[in-house]
Image (cartoon, rainbow, N blue to C red):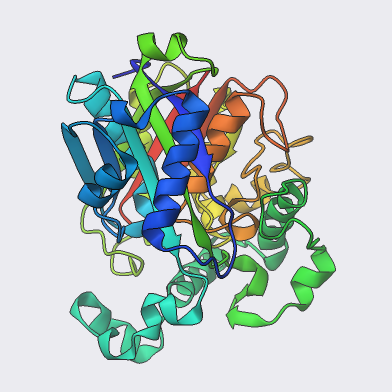
Amino acid sequence: MKDQTAIVGVGQTAYAKGLPQSEKQLALEAIISALDDAGIDPAEVDGLSSYTLETTEEIEIARNLGTGDITYFSQVGYGGGAGCAVVGHAAMAVATGQCRVAVAWRSRKRGAAGARPWAGVSNRVRGNLQWTRPWGLLRPVDEIAMLTRRYMHEFGATREHLANVAVAARRHANRNPGAMMHDKPLTREMYMDARWISEPLCLFDNCLESDGAGAVVITGADRARDLGRTPVYVHAYAQSIPKQHQTMTNYFCDDPLLGPSWACAERLWARADFGPADIDVAQLYDAFSPLIPLSLEGYGFCGRGEGAAFTDDGNLEFDRGTLPTNTSGGGMSEAYVHGFNLIVEGVRQLRDESHSQVSDAETCLVTSGEGVPTSALLLRR
């Protein structure tokens, strides 16, 4: 499927802590925005791809959107690990003739505290969770805090390195009018003084909790070249569940720091005509700041244990870094919609439309969640 399909339209809603629309309405707004961006009528849509965590059913989306016959539909599980995969599934469907115009999206309402899964006290302990939650690992941040402490112990990473990630993301968000943190600067001093959420992770090591939606439209490469927008080709895509993996609490293996990105990267680069050294800009899943150094290592931008130091000297920033990363602000400072905004920003970078534009960007890596069964995309102009 290499370069056989392209993303021809992107759309998103406003991002905020308490939007009035339902998740279905937000999804439809983002999809219509993406179709308008592509110049494609909703009646042409015949493929749908989304997350299993979507509360919006395909039949509802199709009927309210006004599509024709849907000939392909799929969903991908594991929350933040699904974003790149839903685009990859849509691209495979178009490349193999299952459909001609596919839409992938994520709609999410999590701004309200009561909307978060760990707020459901009666449902907290079940399955594998019975081995961790009774001992205090109640939220994703608690689970990643354990992994972060291990990383610090093994490789000497410090809070200064985590601050590099948070400050770079916020600087990009301050340039992006659509970011939730657009008008809220973050200094290193503010980071160091912030309250703990789950040591060693402070307030600014965490993603936002957001309401909003994003969507992309995918067609065949031939059709894409005839549309008004610069086509962004799906060059390669991969998914992975490493052997003996346990979601979020992968502590019971020989190397807990060898996460899903390593297996995903091996497959991704094997399918590509270029490698890590050729990536101009990256959108790395950032539900928590330590996932950035772990992903930098897993996807081959540096060696084991070198991801933290890789973030030094503004190396993630759009105008001076060797790997500009999360140039819209990402999940930590733009919005958290399970990583779908990273895909939208990746496309905008390759169309020269970002608010923190990387000069002459031709290639982009987008990743989904580290710590969960995951996926990744390589996009190119």
